[in-house]
Length: 248
Ligand code: PEP
Image 1 (cartoon, protein in one colour):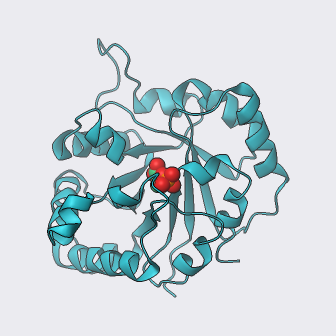
Image 2 (cartoon, helix red, strand yellow):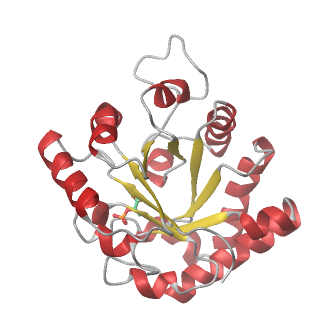
């Protein structure tokens, strides 16, 4: 197994309130979590500070989005500087819901990534194909196009984690098989080796996301190029602990 620290992100999306967030933070605080796994919680912006104060310091918190400049007349947006100011160290960018619902383009997402990294945040950079694209045999082309946009803007990949999330698997209960996920992860490593560098290909962590549960995480985690998960629905439940501990 390569020397990449397993990294599990929870993406709460637009879910939760003070009561339920306090409950899940207590579950995470009380659990025996694998110390070899890095854990990050993507929390709704309005509850980030609240969650930060409730979670142990070895669990990072992430914004689920951030704009591409530090401040200004951008009503409704938040900046990486603001995330850092309230104790968030991470931001999730390019999630398929931002791409599909909010029409974010590869270019805008890459600009956001460039700015967030320049501000000192770590990023979870999401990519993934739709069902239509997979069925048309275009999976590799799509993830290569999305990676290419990031690569045009990212010089230093140290603070980047890529999340490969096939859109057809997100929130559908239809998980990619470990073999399907591994195939794309291996392709991404080859792409990185050919288009970025051997070093980045070997060191960059690539998470799988899409209907990961306590029941399927262990098998997925055995695959050599899967370095963690980005988890939506199950990250709001106690089974998130089993996902964090998938390599234990
Ligand atoms: C996600 O939102 O990134 C995700 C993978 O969701 P789910 O685990 O619910 O499929």
